[in-house]
Image (cartoon, rainbow, N blue to C red; front, top):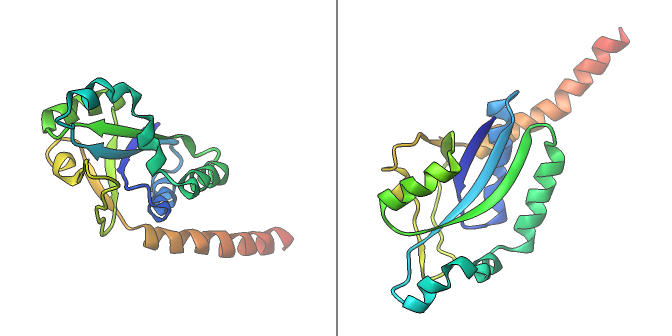
Length: 165
């Protein structure tokens, strides 16, 4: 089983990378962790309340959760787990410690990744991921989405013709 870390801004469109991950890692199962990074606040109160950051989950739309549920149903044998994690910090050392806990096989970005902050403390994770020492790959979700449609529409027709002869 592979664990894949995917930086995200919780845009539902960014979930199309899941199709690519499943198709490129078959027959191995994968666990997917979506990550958003925040710099630490200078406020002592904010730092004391860091473990109670439930309001960060308010940045995630219901559409994002619905799409995750859709992918879990679509690939029940290929996806073991889909989760959401937040990283609080801005140094590579802190990020490496965070990664040790998660132990990802690699970090995946969608092709042409554009960072969109979800609040004033959001930081672009590419500065951390490029220097963390883990394998960082870029995947073209569009290319594999077309391949998946081809697989779903053409292969079953051929299979039925072969079975009927």
